[in-house]
Structures are given as structure tokens and as C-alpha cells.
Image (cartoon, rainbow over all chains, first blue to last red; front, side, top):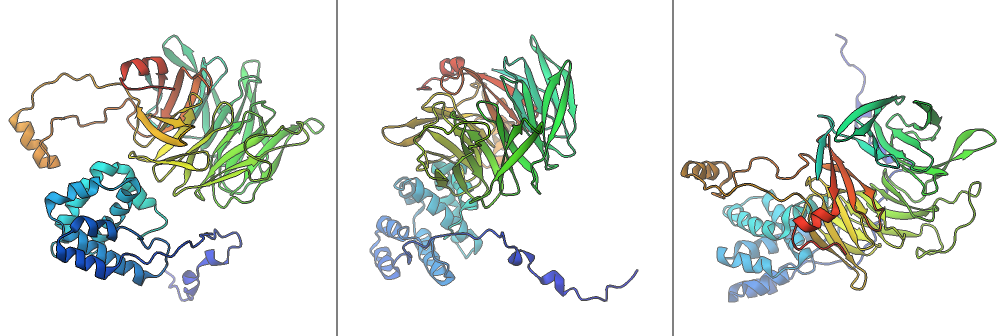
Length: 150
Length: 359
């Protein structure tokens, strides 16, 4: 068979970049949320006030920023709160959230699944079960289709 | 609630004639089959073969008895019944991608086709040339138009599209109609634009045209460009108003769902799951089954039901109102990917399912 001796550099060209009618996402950038405050959360965990730490961790999610560092930082803080929870406290914490809170929690849970550490998967699965009981399949679909990710 | 299985393949789209004795549907191929109701049986009476690609939309105009079909071959045909045969007329849509949905306007003097070319073609008949002509609505649509619905004033058109937005446009053609009066939708184009998080699969105006509802791929139902309900179900593919305040939507969960719109509170709430209640006898679960369940599903729950409990066994892709119109619907029909069609009777649903109130 003939050997392909021609350059295949054309295959690395992204043709969609040159399309005049390309879909450009007009995302207006509202208030840039910086994510939760690490020091405050640390204090609360040390005091044992898990519920407040939980609520603060879920406030100001960095959904609008494109900076991955901010997102990583927020994710680490939230995961620390989630893994510090006792199993029996998970259900009341989930119940205290409203609909959009459950959706946000589900987003963080799936982000946590991406990089499993020693014990995180087990507790995240428990979080997932409780959040699923409240949010249903719809909350998981919203994690998949969300355009503003955490 | 009658379930009729037409085929083993998905029903791509369907449309009823005026007196609901005939249904035109596409059996997931290039044709349109017309079935006629014979008591409880359905017999195929016509096969409309003209398209070169899958037929993605069918609409049967009740008054003028014309059928318009559109397909992935980038064409639309208007079929008229001449004697015993349906004769097609080609309509040049000037699109370079597949057509996705088609709808006759309320007065049936024009129809709209949504396509993957990121535009809507509004087609009307030009008497002098004996030919269907089309005009395009392009701006500001950025992706495939998935669903269309006409406002009762014959001019406004709602379009749901894959660029996550639902918009209301004016499809005013000065050659065939006079200028319309004012509506609640304002006076500048586009009249409304609602944003969501997912592709807008289904869109529907209420009977008066004052309300608009749409379903989106992120499992939400939205209404009037502001009110949104995040649903716990899988994404809903089609929606229709059955009264001025109630919507029925159906989708990948294989059963229709009722939503209630509250005008004073400006909210959409979940009204109930509409499906035939399960009539299984309560038999005890044996120890063996309990262990089997534990093995298979990690729970020793009571249900040994393996299949779906709903009438439809696969996603529902289209819903159409049969009797009563969108203001006082008494029967509606759903078709889906399981090749089956179910006619739902609103009165018996209300009596069978307690706590269901259709306002």
C-alpha cells in the first residue's frame, strides 16, 4: 500500500476557528465570586460547627470565573468540609439546602469524584445518596449540562 | 388510556387530521404512513414516499386538509389530497442542513420550518407563480432550531433552539395578511428571549397566547421568560398547555407529567405524574428474592419489578392535543421511541390519580 509521505499537519488545524458563523458564547461576566474563605472554614471545622462551615463553603461558588486556580481552591475547601462530616449529619445538612443548593452540592460531589483520595470516595458516595434522594435524576442532569461549572 | 403499538421502531413524528380519525406518522424512515381508525384497530391507508431522508416533522392542517412534512434531506413537501391520492409539492427552503420541525400557522396560510442551518424558514404560497416562497429569520439564532409554536394571532412564533434560548419572533408576511394588533409580547423584535441551561426541546404557547412555556435539556420547565422549575425527572422533550394554567410535559422518563402555572405567584410547580396506577397484587417477597435484590441492587427493597411501570416503554418524543384545544383539553396523545401511541383522557386521569387537580 502507498505510504503516506505527505505532511499531516493539516489535521492539527482547528477549522472551526476560521468559521465566520462560529458560535461565540456571549457570557456576560457578573460579580466574580471568589469562592469560600479558607481560614473561616478552618476555624469552624476546629470548633466542630459543621453545619455553618457547610453553608459558608457553598456560598459564593466561583461559577463565573475562568481562572482554574480559584476553582481548585474552592473545590479543596468544599471537599475538606464534606469529608469532615459524620455520616449521621449528612442527611440534615442536605435537607437544609434549597433546590439550587442541592444542584451546587451535586456539582461539587462529582468534581470530588474526579480525584479520589484515601477516604473521600466512601463519604462522597454517602453525600451523593442523600443529595440524590432530594434532587433526583434532574440534579445529576444539571451537573452534566451545566455551562457554569465549579 | 389506550396504548397502541404501531411499530417496533421509534415514531419520529406524528400529526392528526381534523376529526382525529386518521394519523400521519413517520416510522423512523423516509416515508410518512397514514393510518385510519377502524373501531379499535388501525389500518394503514396511505404511504407518502417522497423524502430522501428521515422525516423529522409532520403537521396536518385541520381546515385546509393539507399535510406539510420536512426532513433531513433539507426539503419540505406540502401534500394535498387529490381524490384518493396524496400529491406532494416541493417547497424550496434554501437551507443547507436538515429541517427539524414544521408547523402550520393557525390560519394555515403559511408554515414555519426550523432547521439545523440556524434559521427558521417561513413559507407562504404565492398565487401569481403558483409556488411556495420562503423568507428566513436568521438573527439572532446561533444554533439548530429544535421546536416551534405559533401564537394564535398568526404572526408571532416561538422558537426553541440549541443555543439554550427560547425566543419569540414576528413572522409577519405582508403579502398574505394585515398588520396584527398589539399583544403582551411587546413591539420590538425579538419579542422575548429566555435563557436556560440546556437545549430547548419543546415550546408551547397557551390558548390565549399570553403564556409561553418551554422545556430544556437541563431538566427544567420554564415559563414566560422568567419563571423556572428545576425538575427531578430526566429532561422533558415535549410540552403542551392543556388549560390556561396547566401544562403537560413528557420526555425521557417515559411518562407525562403535569405542571401547574400560578399567575399570581409567578411560579411553576410540579402537579403530579400522569400514568396509570400500578395494579399489582401485594405478594410477599421470598428470602431468596431478598438476597437476589441485595446482590443485584444493593438494597433489599420490595419491588421486584424489572421493567418500567409506565405505559410507554421508551422516551416520549411528542405530545399532541386531541380534543378540547389548549384551553380545555380533554384528551391528548403521546408518541415515543417505543413505536407506541397512547391516548390519555384527562377526566379519567383526574379520577384515577388522587391529589391531581387540573386548574
